[in-house]
Image (cartoon, rainbow, N blue to C red; front, side, top):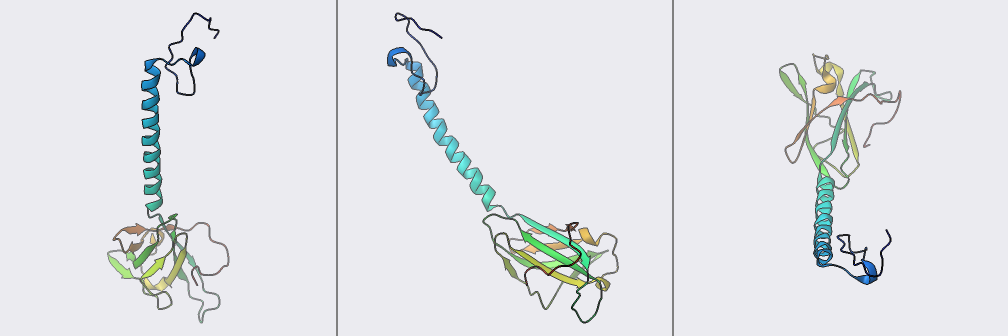
Length: 170
């Protein structure tokens, strides 16, 4: 856009755009004030959203079937892996159980005592014998984990299990 000397520009552009010869109209001054206020409010809002996201408790509960190879017996076991995916929030696991039909069977493993505090991005794993439950139809989705805040999390089948490996959190 070409402006002639005698034309005056009446702009409603952001503060970085100034009219011809440094002239700004009153509307520009009002818009500058509004944009500055919006920028402050936007930054505050973005900060609050990020704080809330970081404070969320993101928990994954995964279950798979395996054997403990160096154990005294080669009995099949179900392994329960709890992953803290929270970027900043630690949490404490207080209870672990499996729904077996109409019963709820507590998972008490003397090698993995509860309560257990998981720091951010930490993994904890426990196991129980396959013969401890009767109904194996939906065991991968029937394990429950309760945290100290009272929230209950449901398990999913762990589909990314290597053929051999170590137990997490040892």
